[in-house]
Amino acid sequence: MPSVDSPSSGTAPGHSAYDGVAAGRMSQRLNWLRAAVLGANDGIVSTAGLLLGVAGASPSFAALLTAGVAGLVSGALSMAAGEYVSVSTQRDTERAAVRLEHEELTQLPEVELKELAALLQKKGLSHATALQAAQELTQHDALAAHTEIELGIKPGQYTNPWHAAGASAVAFAVGALVPLLAVLLAPAPWLVPVAMGAVTLALLLTGVTSAHLGGAPRLRAALRNAGGGLLAMGVTYAVGRLVGTQL
Image: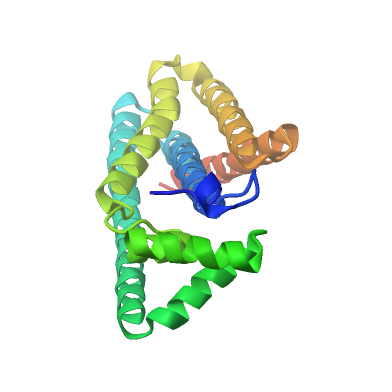
């Protein structure tokens, strides 16, 4: 597909009609990475809270193993189902937007051409250059040009709900393994401190990773992430202890 910054289009160097599309695709990749980090973080916190709650009531190996495996499986499946539904809705919305754009191109081609030229002009092109680029792009592939530049969507390349569901399930399971292994492998007297130490390190890592991906201050994000997770674990452990004493 021709770029509007090619010599034939007369576009000023450094400008491209697809700059916004490339940025949109990069943003989508970063969102997937953030979702994976958040999925792992959810697996760490929820499973650790569940295990410490059970440990507070009945710290037997069988009870902890049952609770941990059940929490890992149910949490991973829940994350997968939620992500599948969410991304399926997004994919349906993308398809509907492409269909609408196709109808508008069929019914109002001149209006759509002017709209495309206006979008290119907003990117820094002169009116004449934007109009020429819009005409050339429309002649090459009108639907692709309009949907990519206007919507940031490439026809036929929609978000995949199965990929999203699988990634969420795997991320959650990997995160859940941290507290599960820590609790199962730690000696009974050291169960709680070992689990909290392992989870704290994991939460600090996911906090730093999410901050790095988002360009935010790493230390603040790591401390916030670890603090929230430790608070959740402390509360569930206290509740488990309280319930356990009443049984």
